[in-house]
Amino acid sequence: MKKVFHLNTCDTCRKILAQFDLSGWELREIKKEPITEVELAEMYKKTKSYEALFSKKSTQIKLRELDVKSLQENDFKNLLLDHYTFLKRPVFITDTEIFVGNDKTNVENLKEFFKAN
Image (cartoon, rainbow, N blue to C red):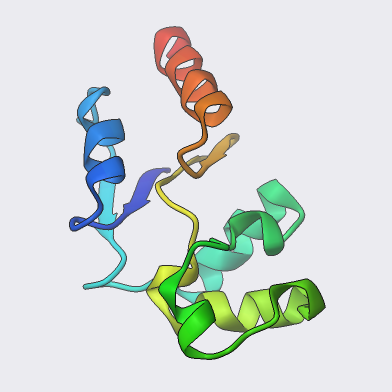
């Protein structure tokens, strides 16, 4: 399995995806085709945390007047399934690895993964 969960309208996602040869990867545009409970469970197995998958920059946080500090793991899970903008993106997932988000360290680790594979 090689999947990339991303948002087409996100400039950062597009810049990151453009850096890699994604032939053989399934590209999933999360607005058109939101993540499923099964896919989220697979991500959770690799991160051991729904919070690690949660984007604290989502515009929905303010709209819903959420207090992120008070959220529990199950709350993060339910929000991730409820609205696509709660997923930290992009998410690159293989049978053995997961790379979540656009922070510099994650992108560097992703580059190393692509060099090795």
